[in-house]
Length: 530
Image (cartoon, rainbow, N blue to C red; front, side, top):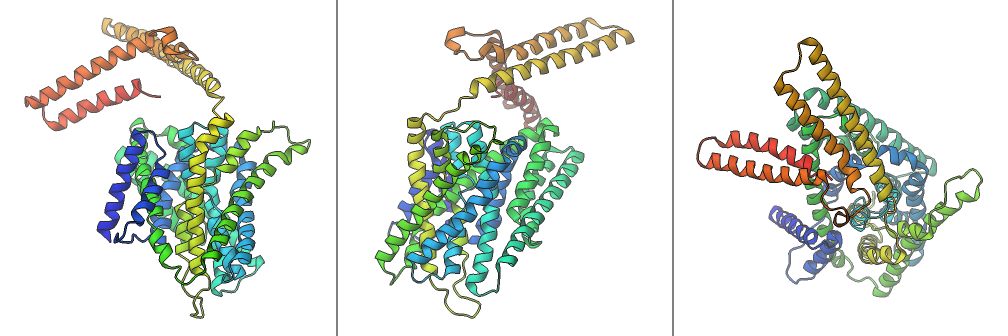
């Protein structure tokens, strides 16, 4: 089993790398590849273990998404995100539960509601991954990202309540509500406390390697702690990640560079593994359907999948336009095209499959759980159906409806103005330091030359954003800042080649070479920053 898992992991990373190289959608390519491999006769079955997904894959993916999220943007859109992340999963749970109860004779109402909770949350990575590739507007990405960060907590809590009723554990509406409230409050408190504690420890370490290591283990510990204390592990991880991400600007440059590189690589690894794993579950799902009517499965599949899609569309449109009928709603209504794209970006993912596979085979009395094979199969249909249907049509819809970022120029102007003010602050600080130096003993010729070089460099950086703003490079030619950057990059390449030659001729050792190259790498990273 270990060799099979390793093979899946290696294959997922290689396929994801190919997808990135050819500018394809890696989630869709990986899912389709998994389905194709699963259909090959004689291929060993790769089993998706629920605990692996919930305790190994989910926490770091949530943590990475939380670090990249903007607390300011989430707070600005808190009402809409709340209705998407809390209201929509609950409505979907009940709607799917009613439809499944009517269409699948073997499902009890509690089991049908369990299915509804399983398929309620859109995937935490698929929508945002595809949205980033399509260049969706910032507010749409904020809504999709904020929803995917929080909806797992809602759906998994509803899942626990419905599953308890399904297997025979006594529960009531009042206890369900209190369970949900407790999970939310405890999860947020644990997340905030742990986030503050992590920031406190990392700030005082001043050791980039140790700080990154702490960041790597933090999501697993926080998720486990949240679940053990009867809170929401999802909310605990997300809350802590938002706290740490908000304070990341105060960390050292080396920590930020290292964290960014590590988490980008880990995110690619885990996302690739998760999507390929989804497709590979086909043999296991089909093997459990022996003796079940094909007509019932087809009708139920169409009904449940259609319900999942239609409920989201109706909810998003109502959420977008109904509140604006009130005079207190001053915000301009979004265009129907943007609303539809948000409504259509409801791909389900590996968390739903993990929750379905985690449903026990028997009730507390030892009897076989009725309708479990249908429940797992319908979950698989919804996951694959939404991933392929939405994923394949979203790029086309974005082009046809013309939903593209219209705030790029505004963002560029703000960034250029911010860079100009930052350069002015740097110049002011340089003048203050030089003035103090003159008062204390005067400036040497070397210091004067250094100050002049710094002034030119600072001016070049301050002007760079304005020089390129809103104009194509072919139109304006090579700007002074671009010329400086091009020439300095060529100089760095020459320095790097010379240092490597020094090592090859054994005038310096490998450790010295790595230290020297690190300095060049940092400067090149500064010159090549986006």
